[in-house]
Length: 130
Length: 298
Image 1 (cartoon, each protein chain N blue to C red):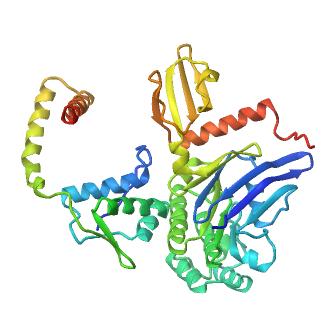
Image 2 (cartoon, rainbow over the protein chains, first blue to last red):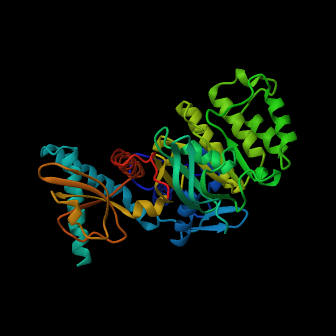
Image 3 (cartoon, chains in turn orange, yellow):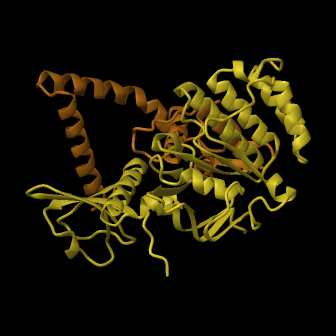
């Protein structure tokens, strides 16, 4: 079962952090179809957060068609996000590592690498939209 | 649905000093309300009015649709944990539970005993020998076992270390999830409230500065940064909560329901802490300009 954690300094709304952690687990295959999410009471008792935060996160995941609530039993994963792309992760990670090594060799520090990646990512996404 | 606390023009005066003035609130049920303000702002006065320990000087207050402390049935519906979570130091944990059972018609003994076991408290231990965190947990257990519809806690975690604080809030949130109890808790620290509250009331210098659902409050406020501007020349639908200026730059926190389109501004979301601090410093400034304690009565 997945265990949630909250970063109160991240600036990301707590419910969104829960949503992102479930999506991440679905993408990486740590949560699979049929797996149960922790009950609202369990999450609340562990993280000391407002129950509505968890309910809101679960509702959003339900709305996205990723989980389904079975009344009186719990909330279950009905679709994963990993699909076929998971097998492509390995080679892509290798490519990225090679690229990172190249960037470091060229003298880029962490901040420049992140900035370059984000900038390129955004400009490519925009081209995609246009 | 009936509001858990509804007040109109509520005020409380001690001698010539108004501890609470012109307080109008309507808190919907099922919320965890954070009552925030500096020490001496009137938080305890407001909470004591809600449980009927104090009678108002002016205005009206209704709690769960009834008058505070209006007979045993009203008292049974509201749980209260006072500041510093007091217990009887000479009485044992078991004595406390027995007293709870005698005094409260709706007492849930199973819940009380279950909680004490879960907390691994020695039933024979005198409350005076418990740690601060354990004492707070005992006080919370008593308030929860009463099975109230509304639980009011005055600075419940102020004296606790971070671990005891977390444990206290865990139990409280579990009770909210399990029993659907409405909660009002006061604190002078926003960090205590950020994770647990979904409704905010900011009280400064005896007056309510802002109250509402935290989510909509955060959505309705923005931080604007840009070239220096006179705040009075901003569009009418921007309410400036806080403004600071350097020679060239203005930084504002504004309340607005609309999107900010003016391209001169860099627009950012604000967090709960910044929101609360903005209203707190505004309240303090208003107090300096026109002392809130001197009230002109018609």
